[in-house]
View 1: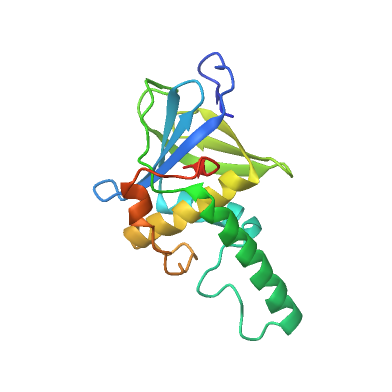
View 2 (view 1 turned 90 degrees about the horizontal axis):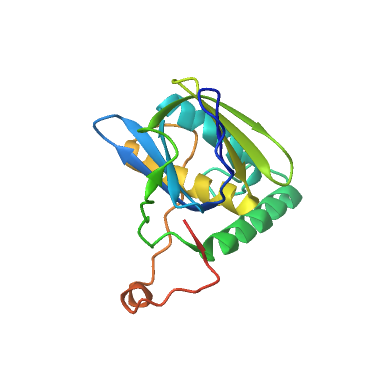
Length: 193
């Protein structure tokens, strides 16, 4: 999952268990919290520039429906294929849990939040995101297709709150079943984010 270089010995890899992305009005930045399987968390500040770059790097493979994802001049076959891909992405999102509150971890992977300054994406089936931070630390994250989809969905929601223009014209959000939440009933097969 993640490790840091170069200022300290690498910490053992840990899997991503939970993500949280929120807008901080005072900082005018997004705060990305990554809950890890070793009960630690990684905290990164994302500026508007880095958020836009992250959206551009990741969104192309998610097929999230946006207000302008199907162009009016698209060929019918292309529009149908785009619609099928968006429907599939929407079904995957429905299986994820965006309602459960983020669970802070006992320890931190870093001392305080790191400010992301550069992103690099590589890999095919599992995407490898390298985040270079102001402090000279490089954070390596392995992102499964489900994590990429979840992160892009959270980017859309956070950008709506921030008012930034990163090229993500957000579709209206589906309603959460409040009865299910009140009863504490959540599908155990849902991925927690």
